[in-house]
Amino acid sequence: MIIRQRLRRAAIALATAGIVPLGLLATGTAAEAATTYTGRTTEGVNVRSAPTSYAPKVGSYAKGATISIQCKVYGPTVGGNSLWYKLSSGRWVTARYVANVGAAPRFCGDGHEYTGRVSSSTSLSVRSGPHTSDPKVSSAPRGSTLHIVCKVDSQSIDGNRRWYQLTGDGGGQWVAARYVTNVGSAPPYC
Image (cartoon, rainbow, N blue to C red; front, side, top):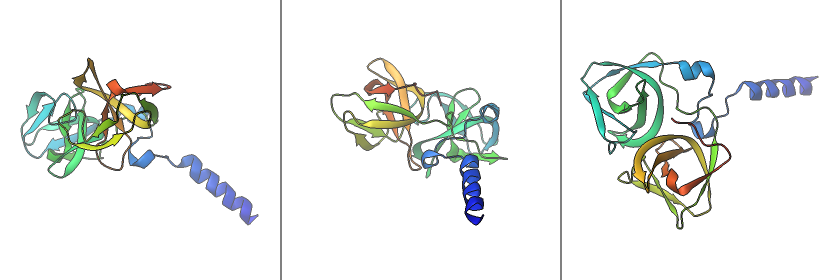
């Protein structure tokens, strides 16, 4: 009887737990995808076309502005904060200068992990953000398998503007999609 109760509790715990690879992926329900979050800028902040300071500036917010946020990703660290917020407009701001009003935004992605294979002729640079000016944090050997969360459009590499965010341990890990072959479905946009 006790063993059966323990097995049932373990099964319930597994069924209700959101298994999240390295804390990056959201649970991905339709309700979460439709949820917007609110933030207030603590300083003036630049709005970028991608989650990196090297992406073109497409606008700005003054200190105290209220912004609508869809989700967040890890990217290049700004003032000790490696989170970037995707705005409802599809543009990006560093989370360093935004205070959450209410709940913190969920991570971008649909809750699934996608697979890619490095197709470059040499090892592929893994960067802290989706731009070649972002620091290299590691590399992936040719032919190795990558675990992908989502994609953004950023700096063009040989005509391909897509960059993939990899699962990681709390820091930005991005690769140019130009050198990655999808294994199965392509990841969604962040």
